[in-house]
Image 1 (spheres, rainbow, N blue to C red):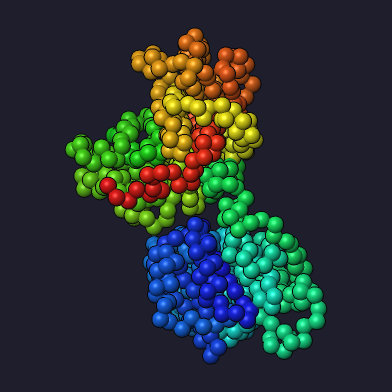
Image 2 (cartoon, one colour; image 1 turned 180 degrees about the vertical axis):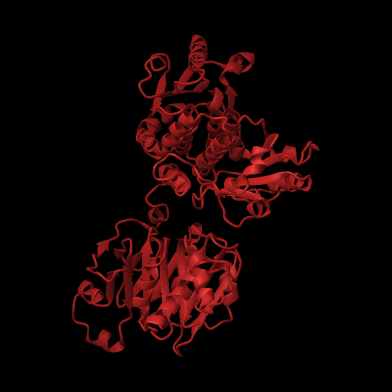
Length: 631
């Protein structure tokens, strides 16, 4: 996910663009850049690796004049974070500059064709391919900038939000979108462009939301036009905005009013990033599976597995190493890999694994899990394993981070930046990726029946919709969460695939509400934790109707016999546990291996609402950092 800002008008653009980048920095943080056309007609690009402040420092002594410009803060997709890969990108003639949010899936084919035409490339990005394609089209077809953008985008496969400057037209921005948001703000004799309304709301409440496959041309008003303006703002503004489809079908701009505050816009209307990210999970899981599960939902294709199939098929053991929430995802993967692939699995805390002189063999596969891809202990753990000849496979979110670069292969989760410190959408995406990996290995080894494989793949495709149904119970969870703010301790219980979910639920509560909580296998309650059961000790039991369900029901009865208060996560229609527990939340039925994706959501919401009622800082809990990059 990246941030896009653009401005054309009568003010100096640089200050507006930089302020916009700061407000969009949550969307991208590894590099930033700005392109400006000054009064002399020069197209200047300034870029820096790192945060927006690095760009400001770099540009401090540069010519930053100009009343038109585009700017970008990057979240790397193609090409590692670097100044060269930062946006904006010049075309080869340096007549054009482009910024881009999204992924051009067929960039390699396009790049090869352009190289045959004599074009050279400076960066590793798909974005540079696009600006070169626009210039090639412009020169080859003899078209204007807008037409060249339209024709070029007709050849593109993928998602994009782009903005283009042409130094020969120093009063015009051409922008387009497909699959990535883009909004135009209409000011007084000026226009703003951004990937969401956050940078715009300070200047205007009138916006146009650009639709998929639309191309918008924004032109600055000349001094003569400003002097002659007698029309209403909306009518006058519309005359300087041209919107067509990529096939040149004319569209009529529809101006809408912003009614949200700046703080709400930054969180898309949610009070906290954590709640926003909980609610994003149906979409982020669909994104994680897109391109990996085919349209017929009868096959999974993970390129990281396909390219290294023999390493997995010949593995005598799989070692999963991770920290915190990622470690819990690894525990769920252990159940899935051993069930479907029949390969022994060990799950290790990276901080312990790296120091205990582990026995690692050349036929071991080490799976490293890290949202940020920069977790210091996990990075050190895979360096140790790699030095001993093991094959390293990583599950990460941030493209180009240290762990995936060091790995032999891997799988990106593609959930976008996760701003809330307490991980939510990253966890479920990791579980999805690991489950798909387990199924791929099992299918290749023929240790899972084709019938079961097909059933699980189809169920995977239904998980986003089923997760949306779970989220509909948010208000119910918010209400009974108020009851438990008194508690000093919680116990979370689960069995099988849902034992790691119990631990993850306990971790979420600890992280953001500062209530002590522990997760246990339900059967282990009798071996110590049962001594803690009382009316003051809430017990959360994860009890979907599968696997060892009857035994978990017995555990609940043992708790109730000791006057414990039970919050149960159950399968839809379960009347048995509902009649025993004090509070129940139902989740749709699914395959046992996929239940963690549904049962974890009520636990995320429970922790969130308890923390909110207690007045805790949900997004930035004390003493915690989002990415632990030091030991």
